[in-house]
Image (cartoon, rainbow, N blue to C red; front, side, top):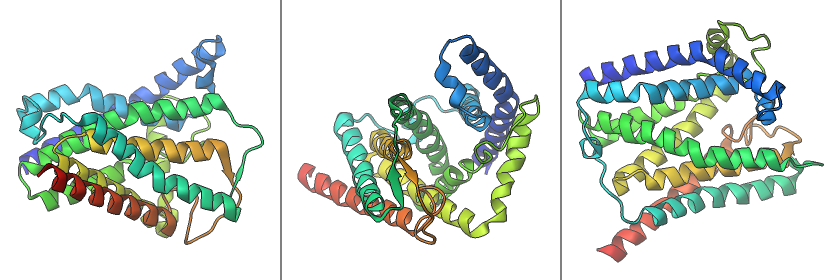
Length: 293
């Protein structure tokens, strides 16, 4: 309970920092873009900076949290060195991208998506950069730190359930895209309030939560089975890259509820794709365990 209370305090501090830091980050980016420095920053709305500000706060408060929890090294979190890190990362990437890209081809064939008339290769580069950076940060936090701390006082099943729930909830903290039209000093808190707008469509909210919860569970199991973060990092990177690339290359032509909602995280199809990746991961890990025994 003491560890859980400290994690809760860490979350509160991170969200408060994100709400306060997001406006200056947004204004700084707009100033740079306006002066011809990194002009690509101009395409991001405030909610994107709010999300990044929360991640920045999470990184800044890691060291005090580690000291508070008396965690000295990775072994205190149940992590071990992985000499096959490249293999695990690459396989994780393939396991997550394969089913999602196959699904994307089917959606294009059915007319749910259509290829854009013009494709921004710079935008694809931004997706690739996010896929290369974000998984390291989020996996270090969710599967490294949070799951490791929860494992100290809970059974693996309970710790997995709690960490998957936290992972899913955190992704609903920012408001919808373009929700904040005027950016003032309190825009971060306004964005947090807008995140509650999602409760107006409870079934879609539940569907999105379920898919993200499943992904969090898969990532937690990957971490527990390998006792390292490399397989989860590969899985996470693949999901970010495949879903982001589809959104940049193609555009949605129709809703297909309950099969597919407004995003690739909502609907029966995304849930099925996640379950397929989970089954492939389990089969591959079973094969690896049998070969290395």
